[in-house]
Image 1 (cartoon, helix red, strand yellow):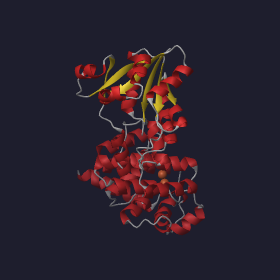
Image 2 (tube, protein in one colour):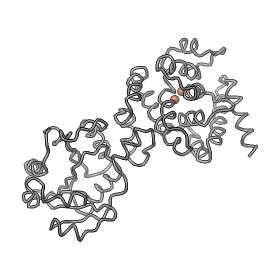
Image 3 (spheres, helix red, strand yellow):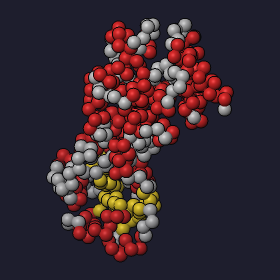
Image 4 (cartoon, helix red, strand yellow):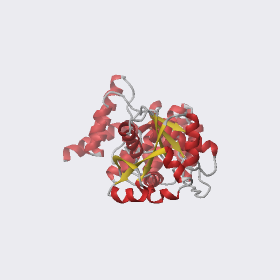
Length: 374
Ligand SMILES: [Fe+2]
Ligand SMILES: [Fe+2]
């Protein structure tokens, strides 16, 4: 068998890693490529980095989509310092008679000769180098002799940048596979402590499906916040808490809502704004208003209000008819997205003979006036 080994901390695994993996499998004609997820290095403790077990799970989620890709937990299980030579020892025992290819970044080449048991490594594995953009292979050959080169040049995505973006509420759409993004948002390990605390309380207050929906709304809200220049941290907080009262008893929701008419489907929005303040300690009136208006909308909505309303309706798990028409409308503007979404909702409620909240009626008229004023 021809086996590639691609090691790293994968914190998190991202699209550039996967591009390298696919290219390596094709160009080196590998039967399999093993993603070797490194254990936590005792010399580089990093409070913000994900635990080994989470890095392993993310790699597993990503690998499912690529034939030939496998994830190995050997370095993590073994613990302590991991040396490539020892990893190769273990792989030779597991796959006797195989040909091994070690995939490394060109930035690792200058230090290669200093690796523990270097001669042993190069006598047992061929080294395949991924060129970083702008690096030149002639200098590399002189430094480390017999090298293979992969014709991918690692795209400008770095795990550090991904972690920083997630910490600040910026989107990572397309930088990691969708399944990995969902996992990161649900687990929250790259988010600030305050967000993680709310997440753990919501996990107890909501059903698992509702909690997953809330996390997808956070993803969509991050994306819209960047697209429309809305404060990403407010967007994240409002998205996270928008359905915080959804799984409470309807009568309790009604009592909290301050509504005079009992319209069950929308009560959790005004009730949620109350719970967000009293139970989760959120004082920001803009965030509370976005939670309150996320079902009905209203006239004079702020960008944040519209963003949460639309992120809730268009998160990637939604598949009702017209959802794509609403997504397309949001590309034009938040206001246009609102109009298309409200018209859809109004028609849907009328068809079901369901009650329409007065705020929804005001909202639809408001966005119609705005559109005709253009
Ligand atoms: Fe809701
Ligand atoms: Fe929702």
